[in-house]
Length: 205
Ligand SMILES: [Zn+2]
Image 1 (cartoon, rainbow, N blue to C red):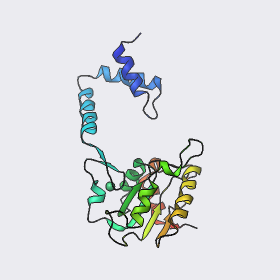
Image 2 (image 1 turned 90 degrees about the vertical axis):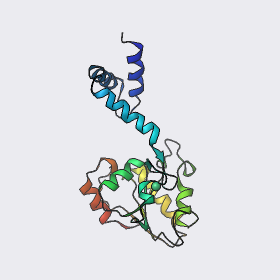
Image 3 (image 1 turned 90 degrees about the horizontal axis):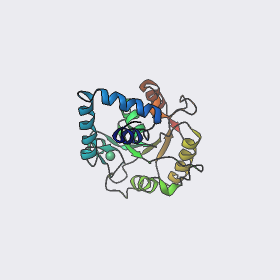
Image 4 (image 1 turned 45 degrees about the vertical axis):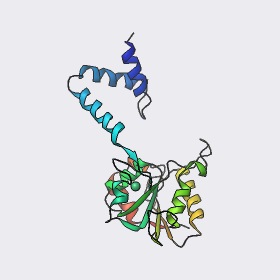
């Protein structure tokens, strides 16, 4: 029977994506064995995340500043807006260093199964940005909206829904090329594949 401290930490870690109770216990054991060296670093890094990271009011990115570094960067092109499901997708695309515009994080995908409806996602704020009702973009700023949803059924359903909602605006709507593997999540793709999908993006419809 492990101590209460170990049980508590293992239970907390087992909630992380990809970690079940078994690997959580293994991680705890690893940490206990290295508490002189590795543990301090991890505690410091976690504390910094807790203290300094905030969600960007404009795009939903997570950064140490609000608006985030991307939204605040005057070199980023305000004409192009890339819509992603999650912050991890934004980071993956930005690592590929091909897209020079700005982003919009939906905060998930439409899902009948999980009961995620349009109102649960950051769609109103997206429409506001495209329609110039948001102070973040200048008048008539957005000319292209890139729908960079995952190549999953729910991702594509979300993209179709967004394309319909965006139809009333005078913007070009494109989506990532389908070099993406079916069921592929952006986060797991290598940067070359992502860059290729972005370069070969095509109009929706
Ligand atoms: Zn931002």
